[in-house]
Every structure is written in structure tokens, then in C-alpha cells.
Length: 147
Image (cartoon, rainbow, N blue to C red; front, side, top):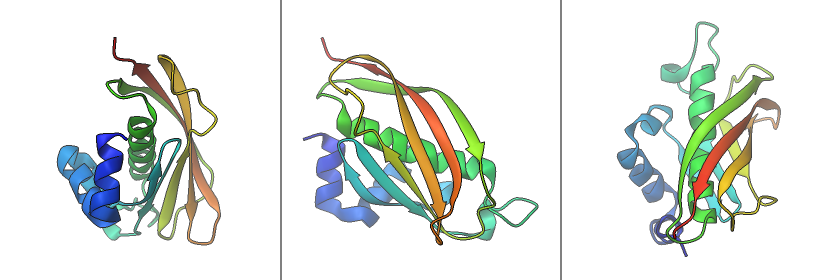
């Protein structure tokens, strides 16, 4: 079991989320709570707060990108073999609707082959509290395996 997954299971969602924000402080700007984490899957909730809104009063595009990178990265981390490394290489996004409520970001990498090195395209969808998809991303994760 990966160290991150072990920490999630031991500390629970709140404690794990605080730890992630300590390790990568920029994530704290969206005040996320990682609600689910397992190989091939990660989910986080981001509360609607004025601090992450734009001039329209909706969640800012970059806050949505931040949530997408959080779930894609943590999911990748717990999915690759022990000793492997990863780094985001690129992100393509689509803004589908205005995010006017709390949102949930979901990274589903269950169909990816995590046992090999190379670029992996991780899909992330973000939905609002009514289940409307407001954002989608395809994040290229470069995975290197231990030798």
C-alpha cells in the first residue's frame, strides 16, 4: 500500500486533506476535503467560498483546475507501483457551466495501466451540488517507475 493511501486510511479525510495542503500549500486555497482515495480513483469536495470566486460570483476557473490537479495527483500517487514517481505534464480543460455551489472533483484512472512507465491521461470531472458537470480536465501525468 502506498504511503499516501495508508495516511488517508489512518488519518481519515479531514486529517489527510490538511496534510496534503501542508505538503503543497497552494491546494489550501480551495479548502478541499479528500473524501475518497483508492488506486484508480480519487474524489474531493471543494466548498463554495467567496475567496475562490471570480467577477461573476462563480468558482474561478483556476480554482477548478487546482481541484482537478489535486485529485489527479493523489490518485496517480496511490496507483503507481512502489518507488515510482510522477509529475503533471499538461492539462486540457473545458468549462461547461457556471459553478455556483460546492463542487466535487473526481479523478477516474481505473482504466489506465499503472504498471508501466510513460504518459497517462487522467480524466477529471467536476460536478456541482446538483450533479451538473461544470468542468472537465484531461491531465497528462508522466510516470517513471523504480529501476
